[in-house]
Image (tube, rainbow, N blue to C red; front, top):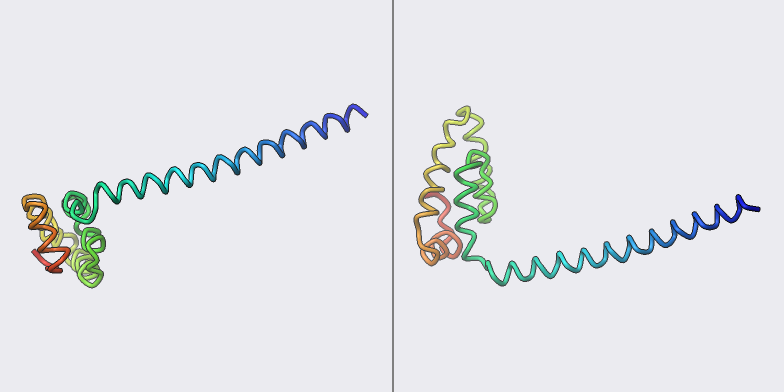
Length: 120
């Protein structure tokens, strides 16, 4: 009899924990969604400059900055060129990163996001 009571208590506790976890997961998803929406409003498209510039400096030979800007073909070319040249082609994105970071926000946006200038 005591074993049944303990089992029922454990089952009830597990059911409550599962319910609370589901509630928490829903609240967490909502909070993340709200944060993402707020970040998009604050950052917008113009502030890709810093992200893309830093990624070009750090991981440029992988072409990550090109993919973020929407230049898939150029990103693949950069990746292949870096592989074929054993990383020497990584100089190109390093220079691009410096160029990105030295441009004004408006100039960067107009040149690389609106004008779709793929290289330098």
